[in-house]
Image (cartoon, rainbow, N blue to C red; front, top):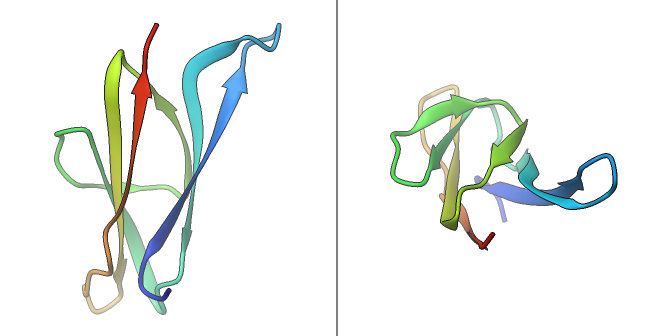
Length: 87
């Protein structure tokens, strides 16, 4: 699909390889002439994002929405993922 973001998640463990509530997020885009990537985490406002970042989870539902924006400020398709974290 073109004009969208693929959200890839990887679980990182601590030094003893125990799961921790942090996911490594890698955003891949297929938007020609990409200017920026915008993300929305949970119910917060849209903000610019790097392609790779750490996502610190809280208890309950955690959601990310991501969308590409090209150099003409045209927004692409919104992608999203929700992760349920229980302690």
